[in-house]
Image (cartoon, rainbow, N blue to C red; front, side, top):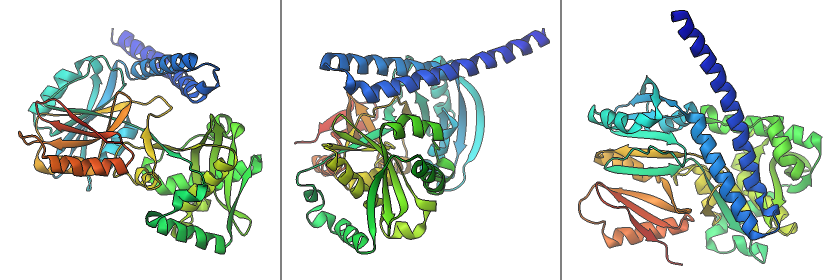
Length: 408
């Protein structure tokens, strides 16, 4: 009997690995449909294709996690958090919530349909917060006094104005103008390339060092073939040069009047280039190239859905708006019965974003029984408007979410 059980477990693992591989391919296909749906000649067909691709992708995301996800207990000096989800997101949670090293305990694999019962038990046993990484259409969503969801990714886009130089006019962009003028004086320029040799140089000497240096253990490294087949063959590289030598690059393409910023990198992650403002230089040259190709929108790519994130903030400074990601993505569901003032303050400082009916709102948590003061709401609305969001959602214990929309 023991031998039979061992054989069945081994067979199950093999089937699960094969099934997850197939589901990953389905999600990839749905991603590409969402990116290319504009090619369909009629609006109704585009809308239907988007709906079907998102639904199939979300179902695939759910099935990939089914029937169980690994659970972890993170114990820090100030709070204890239970996380259920992938190791990649676990690393993000540790980074966001624990400045010092947290004690990590494995809880085994948690059945998705038992999440509600487990959540109540964990909170009753002293956990301050439970976070679950789930599909957007998870059929057994747990709920507690404080419950909110955060998309794992959002997209940020920028309208390219006419004339182009008006984008960086005014006092707000004085620093950017100074950097760009200085860059021109010290020999910076750009060129567009569809050369395989340039792509190889970009991938191995710019992209890999840049991603690993910038993100460390949180780095998500795309494969060479994925970058080549998905993006480079349909677009190319905006290569930033200094005295004709490529020092940075941006993988991009044009589609449906939009210039898509897919991946950017700096030669050997050179710290001197960062001091010269290479991020601003890359963005400005990419916008210039997109504008020269007739693009009306500059899609700045994906960002984590918390406003304190450095990548999110750098795009926000250009005046980018938050929109739904043109890829399949999951959500983090946050659950708590009550929140200590320190944990509430920490979450509010992180500045999470919630997606409600395809609109994006800054999250403000409140443990007060009285409504949030109108002056505080107006102050927060002004902040989220500058961050390219649609409004503010105030979440209080045992009460309906209060949604405030930004006035045009």
